[in-house]
Image 1 (tube, rainbow, N blue to C red):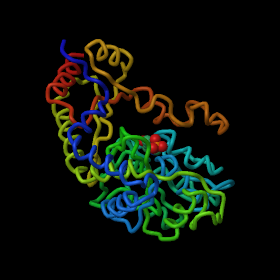
Image 2 (cartoon, rainbow, N blue to C red; image 1 turned 90 degrees about the vertical axis):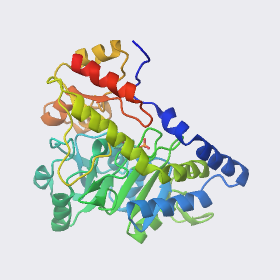
Image 3 (cartoon, helix red, strand yellow; image 1 turned 30 degrees about the vertical axis):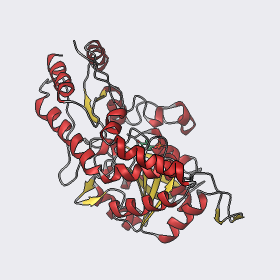
Amino acid sequence: MGEKVLSNRLDRGFFKYQEEIEAAALKVLRSGYYVLGPEVLSFEKEFAEYVGTDYCVGVANGLDALTLAFRALEIGVGDEVIVPANTYIASIMGVTINGATPIFVEPDEFYNIDADKIEEKINDKTKAILVVHLYGQAANMEPVLRLCKKHNLYLVEDCAQSHGACSNGRMTGSFGDVGCFSFYPSKNLGAFGDAGAIVTNNEAIAQKVRMYRNYGSEKRYYNKVVGVNSRLDEMQAAMLRVKLKYIEEFTQERFQIAQQYSKKITNKKIILPQVRNHVTHVWHQYVVRTENRSDFIEYLDKQGIGTIIHYPIPPHLSEAYAYLGIKRGALPITEKYSDTIVSLPIYNGMTQDEQTKVIDCINDF
Ligand SMILES: *Cc1c(COP(=O)(O)O)cnc(C)c1O
């Protein structure tokens, strides 16, 4: 039966650039600077350049990037933020940690927020729209930008899964007032521990996040506000700088795997992912749907193929958000997706044999 194909393998992406990554880490160890030093500054400059924004501020993780973004926009208690119902729960927590209320909008057929269903949710309390480029596919930005302009709303982008994805040739993260990134190890640009960043063209927002991330101080021991400790460390920044140099290769490799899947998986029981015109998909996840999900997962598992569900419980039905009082049935498309989706193995360094095995097994299901 051969080796197992795991749902993800983070070691493979590392080994490909092992020497360079280890050298970068060793340099930091020997430098005497470990948190918010020259590597962080260089990474911030290089990542802003990559996304095409004026500023980047490194923080400890993706959730902090979201939380501090909404805080910098002064969105909190009494405010509403339009959010996609079909997303990872961290997107929503970035809003609710600040005391604001998430207003859920159903997804389109590409799993991203359905722009046609946003305007009906806008009222006097609405302060912002949060777009998540889920699974690595850029969302439909033109109508969202129009709505933000028309109703004078902030736009925040959750780019935790979309490093390098574009909408109409423009990089995700560069549309919003703030773009929020995670560099959690499994993300398309992954660190070797937790890491995150915000990007923006607004100097005041960058300045605020820089202050909040370090106990609310701009100058050491002079604290303007009650901030948090959400600093990026030198080790992560140094290793991210190495991986950022090769991000096009990483993305290209995911693209090749996704293309194989889309071309060669022909089993009619499996609904394959679609890509919207004029956007790019960087394939953070390759998500299919099937009505016989538990049979499908069990069958693949028996064949030695691992799968995961991103995500089995939509945020509005999770225990954490029971207080919002949104019942099952309220967001039927989101709920239907969460009951039928499965993510196939896709990762940097996935061999041709592994891909073939996944394809052949699925076609035999
Ligand atoms: C991973 C992720 C986050 C949170 O990032 P962390 O670094 O894990 O805090 C937020 N939103 C989305 C869509 C994610 O995939």
